[in-house]
Amino acid sequence: MNRERLESELERFEGDADARRVVARQARDLADSGRVAEDLGYELTVDAVVDELADAPADHSLVERWNWWVGSLELSHGGYERFQVRVY
Figure 1 (cartoon, rainbow, N blue to C red):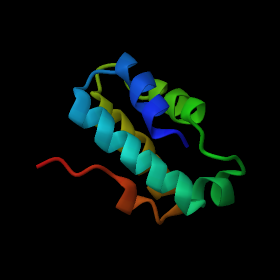
Figure 2 (figure 1 turned 30 degrees about the vertical axis):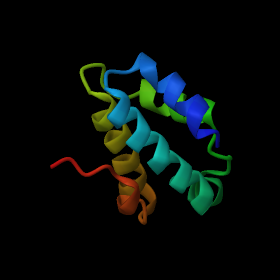
Figure 3 (figure 1 turned 180 degrees about the horizontal axis):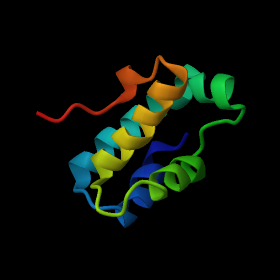
Figure 4 (figure 1 turned 120 degrees about the vertical axis):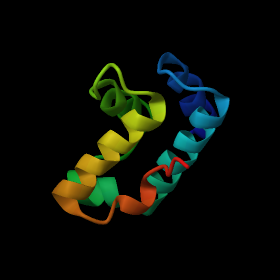
């Protein structure tokens, strides 16, 4: 997973540079964990992340899109909560 490319691709969604950086970091951690490959049968790539986030509700910010997707993975497979972005 190329974090720099992902950060660039994430510009299409609402969010500042900090949001893009944290989502890209979580995506890299998720890819490195191998969970998506194990549970869903495909490697997590930049294109896969962008496609998944594009499916989220249009009014969601970048972080909300990420948490929406990761939350669905948590519900369906479990073990994904640690990849969510916490907003304080």
